[in-house]
Image (tube, rainbow over all chains, first blue to last red; front, side, top):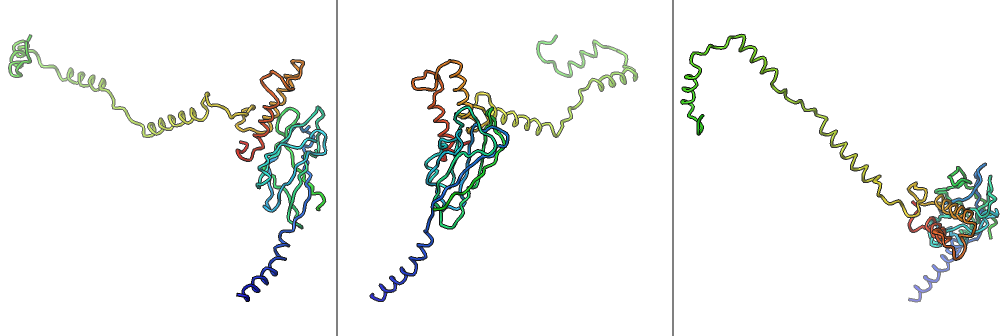
Length: 144
Length: 138
């Protein structure tokens, strides 16, 4: 019985550091911008997710552009899933064009990984309320 | 006239009495009568093999059309631009309508106590629906 206890303790001491290494996690941000080229951006909707299920969104901020300074709408349930939908309408009469910073995601992820959103759908709305071609630009912030 | 259907033998005797020695029709007359009868005889209708399946296909297409695009079909709740889905384009439409209404009426229709049919709550609900991961967006 005593031999079995020592064996168990040894196993725990062997496995624990490895498990700890797997669970080491970091925090960071992803800046989301929308490049709508010459079209003025009056709204946007993004459906996206992380391919790595270990990446989790822990907070969502508005973008640095004044038109999209308020946090975009999202379903809180999406923070615990693998797919999220973000949507926002521009505030104020001045509409940005070109590359517009629309939101910032705060994420928790396995240390050393480089999380990147996989875009499922992006809808950019122009000044007249029509969908306009656009691409998502994402930039990872400093890892903590 | 007979009161009841005559006996064939008796009918033949009566006809012989009436007609007597009537002349036999000539061969020319027989030929003309036969020719006339042949031309007046109704022609058999040729059935086209493709007709029945084609009619069935047309009927099926009509039923499908009625089912898919029937005019009384209710649009999706919140699908303001009637494109078959609810997304940010619909939210833009609603927001735009609110702005136009506010400008037209010269008052803040979007503020608390506004009596308009469209309120900020409507826009809020629509946006929440758009981003909902429970129902999807389309």
